[in-house]
Image (tube, rainbow over all chains, first blue to last red; front, side, top):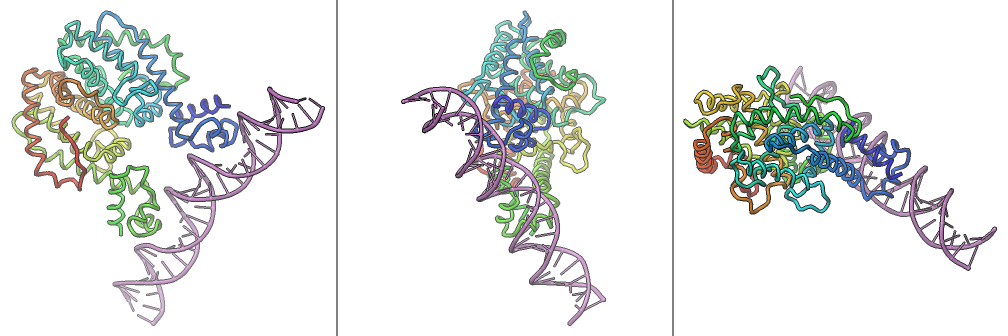
Length: 224
Length: 224
DNA sequence: CATCATGCCATAACGGCGTTATCACTGGAG
DNA sequence: CTCCAGTGATAACGCCGTTATGGCATGATG
């Protein structure tokens, strides 16, 4: 029964958002009564917590599996692409996890500042850029990682709020942002553009076979 | 009565967050009954809409009054500082307005993509950077403005979620981000750093007298 | 076999929510 | 004065999360 509840909760959450996830509806869709929710969970909040934790764990696993080629800047860009792609694929989940501050942890009991394994992955990726001489600023790879994360997160957040830039804008906003991040970190502009372009191809190639990593998802367009 | 309701709603929203703003509590704190809420507003949602719209309007007015010196890059950075400062000053309001996608409009009936007057201000500021030869990319000032906005917004969002970078990090994260934005847009690194530093002084000077622009606010630290 | 303890959940309830129907009251217009 | 529009107090409806109660299986124990 517990599994059916989690399943139903995940589906409701993903398809209709958190406001539609009520104990009565959840029980009904799982074919049971509200009482069984409380036999298996402490509260309704624990249910969404469990679903969101599982979802972000999926994202973390996905991000860790991102192929690390020999171009560290492309790797950082690729991580951003995967983050955005996951968010666009399941907007409600992303929004809820973001609102609850769950996106950085991926690990129960983590301290409030970013401490999930993905965070380590990103920090390492940025550190690789520094080591390779591509990045120059900031010297602190944790700070650099945080700035990348903040920018991509903000971009996606605004995108999901329907505030994406007006159509007719020249260039692809997300590509431009990725390039700007690298250049802003000290990379050579031409190399940054090349690395971002390379990461786009890697993403396209790699994204297809890993489709099954996420549960069934509606169509989406990571093109942007 | 209407005013007392709006007042009380604004206070509850700012101090205790949206989840604490119930019709019954609002009526009680305004010294009336729930019915009066519905004589003056269509629904509870309209109440928070009104409060948030007023708050973002305040922010927009504030942003428009930002002194435009002769350094366009410093001006862009200053806009970011003011945005962040307002968000830190009233976290609940910012989070709620952000969740409702109200932050860009500042104007009823605006189309979904950013169309508020502040948006025009930011676009113009970025355009000034392009015209002055400080910025080089992207050529489209709307896109450039969007990228700045997304980064600052993401930074503040994560900051309010308690995911600010670990203490002990070297350098000031927000300063570093502002510098990175300018450099990523093509500015000369040294000039970017100088402009951001200049904007910090301008902000400190200008922030004191305009304290009264916002309603009574708890202590906060825009230092970053 | 009978007995009992345990875990699961159906029913129904409690208080609180947004919202609405009803109606008493007030104050200005004719 | 009457009449009317607007206001809001009372109480209700159907939701919500949560919980008390109790029935029903199941499996261990004698």
